[in-house]
Length: 355
Length: 276
Ligand SMILES: Nc1ncnc2c1ncn2[C@@H]1O[C@H](COP(=O)(O)OP(=O)(O)O)[C@@H](O)[C@H]1O
Ligand SMILES: [Mg+2]
Image (cartoon, rainbow over all chains, first blue to last red; front, side, top):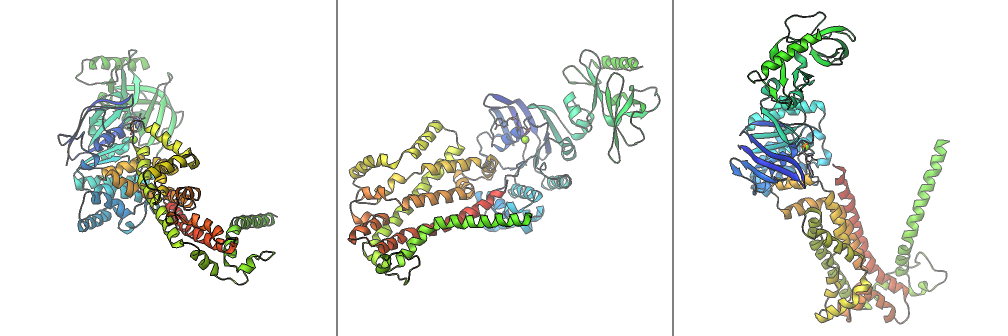
């Protein structure tokens, strides 16, 4: 069990400042997912917690204690690396045992722990194999077992599923969620995949260019994004974003909140006439793009697949609550903000212009 | 058509390989052959390739022609000491050069490379004087101390260590492994092919060393096999090739044993590297 805190943390590689003045709290026992585009500093953040890539300035605290001078092996932290980092010359068993031996765990207890962990992750039959004789999924399990067996208070995982095929990935996702429910320790999980973040996290920390964009539960992240970046990053296909005025204010709405009709509909928050330009049938749902004469394209996700290419349609958003406004700086303008009334007015203007 | 030309190719290939093996193996087989021949047979013309009456008398004669047990012991002590000390110095040095950043790292590494390029012939006079000053000329140390470090080995091993993914070492640090443990539990097993290569090279070059021990030693009790075997020529008065070749076999046999041992290691160790 452990709570992790970053206080005014800065990280630079030579002169290249990757993370600047970052503050973050990761709650004890949470399944926190760090998500963001590749190169945004997720791994860098994780390595600071582990102590293998220390911060340039600021403090990292585990359970309220500044760990800046605590070596990686003494932090009660286990990490699953992106490429697993399994010791290639050791057998599966030796891989799992290495940390225990270094921590001077007595032999009988080691055997017991190894057997327990191996059966938990389904490696019992492979204990005497070398990593080169294992499949990708099995190697991934070795990395997981090696972390689990130490009974750490923090689990760090750096895109642990990115090298697995799609099917195995979905299966491992479920297993990791179950593992967290069982262990109840703090999990910090890194991914660039928002679907993975949404499905696994109880708290999502969204990052971009070394800055935290938003920290919230998946529901809040989806329903109430703080800014344009969060709104666009979470959700698939991403949110439609259009210009609200000529000053750089914008409004957006999710593809799954858009209706398609062949006639004009009254009393909508937003409506636009256009032509279906693409149509992707994904099985139970279909994704359309509808483009108007000005070249504005709206993506629509629908359960029905009756709309055809080149068909003339109206796309509309009924409820004003499904429309999100963003200021020039990309920050969200919410209902109780001063500019909200202006935005509503502008939106009416947009709608009137359209007709 | 295709089958036929393929066949010709294969046959040519095999013949070529046999030819190459023969060229390399012939001198060696010739040494064995001569070492088994009688005095009369050695001097017949044309020379016989397969001994008519193979016998081991020459080996006994060679062994008794000088204090060969002492020579052999000296050679073994020298080679074991050299390789052990080299390992103790080379592995930490290579690890430090590969993994750490420290002051003057590049300058120090350049010094290692320069040492690698200096021929021993340039250094023997000052080394001899130094050993004399230290009173070591009647010991085996003059044949060991100058070879304590192996610049080629440091270079090769450093290259090898640098290829080890950073994450592996970080994973070991997270597993609470000390630096020493990282070196001997992780780095050394992974560097086995490099180490086997280095040991083999080091063994062959120091086991066969002739010039250096010849000038560094004045008494038989500190001489190695190479010098002893060369002395066979003069002790017999006239050149007895079969005895000399038998003496040479004392020198060659250990090399073969070490080679077989190391090459097996090299192959085994390479099978690890099939993993990302
Ligand atoms: N060892 C390093 N040396 C120099 N720059 C680095 C190093 N590691 C990461 N960076 C830089 O820091 C930034 C963040 O990297 P990283 O944390 O690995 O991103 P992510 O894991 O989110 O993809 C990148 O721009 C990357 O180029
Ligand atoms: Mg990364």
